[in-house]
Image (cartoon, rainbow over all chains, first blue to last red; front, side, top):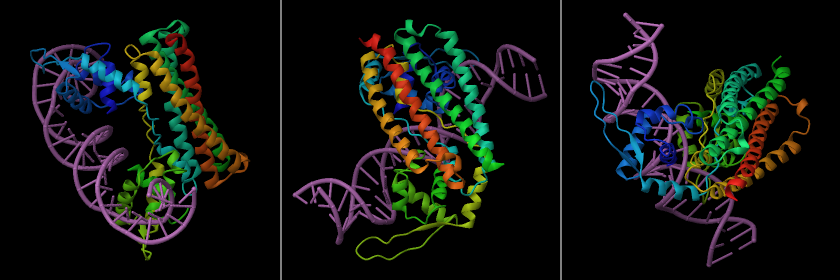
Length: 180
Length: 180
DNA sequence: TGATCCATGTAACAGGTTACATGATTGT
DNA sequence: ACAATCATGTAACCTGTTACATGGATCA
């Protein structure tokens, strides 16, 4: 059910079409919750049917009509109710850690190569987050409301990526002997 | 498809029944890959059908027959093939971070309460991991093969939990003003 | 000439959760 | 008396991914 909440949250800022939402879920919000456009269109349909969002068709020539959606009062209430419920911790499901467990069988050099590849991903994520943090939130102590929330979740992203990055370095160090 | 690989990996150590696998996926391996018993029985059926594991029925009186499964040569080959494929980074999907993004609407005190609740979870996880690390792997530099792999993934767990714990403390500090 | 952007969707499938079902044995 | 352990499963449902479908406008 949480995709619904992520969509409603995104619509707190702006009225957005499915297409625009899909782009957000590919970038900013997408760092914390991924969703494809197919999922989003389907969820928007349900949210509209149940009165949590309201779409209004904007006629266009030579391309499909745009349907921007706005959150309704009922939608806001739903977000507030959800905010009061406990958040289950995200379940970790990581191929790479399963591969670590299989080190009895798989060659250490192969595992090490995979960890190095993963390291690149986390390094670029971390760099992106830190650039945003420096540019958008240079004075964290002065933040309030929406901006404070964004800063706090960005801090989570930064700590998360740094943890994986440091782990990758440690793991490669430990595997070097084994693979050498 | 990755549940299949997690099961095959677990079967590298021991022949196990679905029931025993379910328990492992509720503890040790379960720290990195969760699965319910229903999923496991279904996957075992498919793995057996396709020749990656082999089950043998052990008759029992007064309770259902046990069916321990062993990994086959074909199963080992499949694990090796999988080990050579790149591991997609785990996608983060966390309610709590979406709630952070909705701080324009939801009361800071409510968010702070949720983060504190989450903090407890990560603190207890971290403590459990560190206890295992100290007890089972007191000399990390001397490890090889299977034990080295377990230690490396445990290190990931420790870094992951510590990152969330530190984040929770930082977030609560930032929210105290706002909520106060 | 080919790629990308805009803008919407359908359909099939794979993965995962929740509820239901049975039934003796052992521990509190 | 009640819960947990052992031990297997079925069925319905929800969530998420991949493939397919359309079609003009703009840019390299």
